[in-house]
Length: 87
Image 1 (cartoon, rainbow, N blue to C red):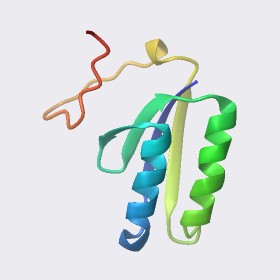
Image 2 (image 1 turned 90 degrees about the horizontal axis):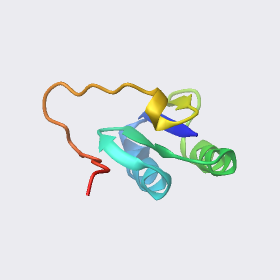
Image 3 (image 1 turned 45 degrees about the horizontal axis):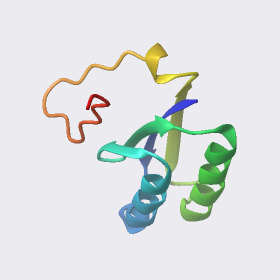
Image 4 (image 1 turned 180 degrees about the vertical axis):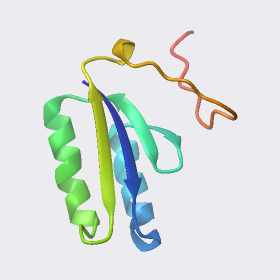
């Protein structure tokens, strides 16, 4: 499945969360990641993320779609990390 993950986490924990998300997804811009994950890998990512966050203060939002082709994406302004799949 295609995942977009967005987090809002206290500054003290941002570094750990950033490193975790980069292991599973592609960094798009501040606190935003996207990419293909299996359900098992998504559950693994969330399990590890729950060890980092404070659920009374932090939040993670996950948008999912069956495939990237079912998602329209429009970038206005500077694209921080261009994931052009064209070679």
